[in-house]
Length: 101
Image (cartoon, rainbow, N blue to C red):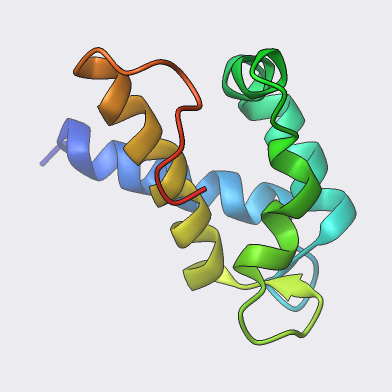
């Protein structure tokens, strides 16, 4: 049986996470910043135009356990924030308009 679009989307998020993780299956700050710049340039550009440096605090806000790395659940929280922003845009909100970022 072939995968559904939803299943492919989830697997894509997992693949993206693994593309930037180290041997410990976590993302350090330099790799997280690279991942964001390479995969969310339009989102980051919209934030920059509003005078919001999204990357300045994204790592610290998501590293809940303070281990200086982003584990998979912390990564999902970050992706969730970005998804909320895109969802709000689908209802007419400006890009990078706030929410949980």
